Amino acid sequence: MKKILSLFFVSFSLFFFAQNKSDIGKLYLGIFFNEEQLNNFDKNLLIKIEGKLTQILAENGIAASGYNNGLIIEPNIIVNNNEIVEGGMQNINITKLTLQLLIKQDQTQKIFSSFSKDLKGTGKTTDLAINNAINSLSVNDSSITNFIEKAKSKINQYYEQNCNSIINKASSLEKTGQYEEALALIMSVPESASCYNLAQNKALETYKNYQKRNCSIMIKQAQTSIAEKDYSSALENLSQIDSTSPCNAQSNALIKSVENKISAEEKKELDILMKLHNDAVSLEKTRINAIKDIAAAYYKSQTLPSHTIIVK
Image (tube, rainbow, N blue to C red; front, side):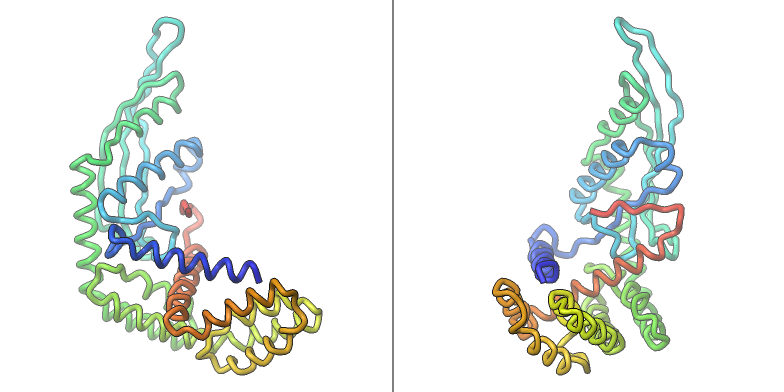
């Protein structure tokens, strides 16, 4: 139960965070490193780059996110030259590199914008010199701002032109039972697109149909847990059944059957959970966040083997 409730509270905290004035209308990009970068560079350096990019994106009205919509920014470091200069007590490395950035949609590989900048850094080691070069990258660099603005414009243009076909494709996927892919496709539509609300409504419709397909499975899992007197696991499964699901009445009956078999603390948490289920506004927020989780899980499962996503 604690696990379930914590997910609900996290969902609501994310919702309220997204309503901060500075975050309204933002695009969301996952930060992506390919296998070559992971093999050739120190993990701490990649984390440094991830942090720098997160800051740059925030300065330009884009939120770095977990991989939840297929839109990514891909950094690529190319070391052009490394010289060792003798000096005083210790030699100094002077490293020249090129930082390339691509903003694209991962599944389609459609590139919206590209960027390349030469950087130079110094340090006692090559890694420190590269780190110093990355630090020299300014978040207010006009060339980066232009790169991101170009990407934002092209992303919005792409979704404006293709929104109907995206929703139609999602409907086709739904009809063949590919609910996870359908939801992932719909959730790729950014908030800045004029069809965003239409896409969200379609996502909710698809999610309810997804619930109809899966609710009997969750009921069976809950029944097995109850037979094993694992009431906490049973309630965890039952709490995931939507109130519009055809299994809702059966779910409520099973919850009622274990109410007197759980601890006082679990009963208190269950009461909070049921209040959320019975509040229409809270329930819709919870559905949206559940949809985002499904989309994120789908994209992670579909990521090419040579790619790694930095997920917060």
